[in-house]
Length: 120
Image 1 (cartoon, rainbow, N blue to C red):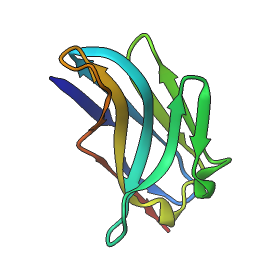
Image 2 (image 1 turned 120 degrees about the vertical axis):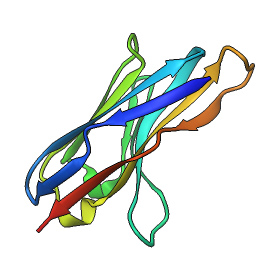
Image 3 (image 1 turned 90 degrees about the vertical axis):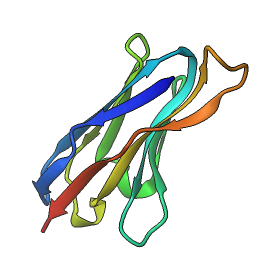
Image 4 (image 1 turned 30 degrees about the vertical axis):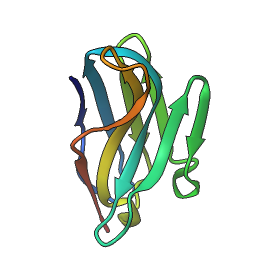
């Protein structure tokens, strides 16, 4: 059993900041990558930021405003979101590509999602 648990969402005014955190727990053998995706109403889920080893990837709309970080020892990933805009409003999902102790392959795992609402 593997779980990803997010925290840190909420309501903030435009220009404000929020920090999201995600902890992976359970029967984890190894983690290849961790990241954040978001889904706004009526839209498809989209990548926000990922970190794979030492390689970080950001979606263009968040570059310069969001910062992703990972603690490999604790199996956590965080997303610092600054200069938030109303268009950042979405449910944010934590993602991990990991191999559990019950598998020889790595698979995608998702958190339950946390709501981020940015008011204008």
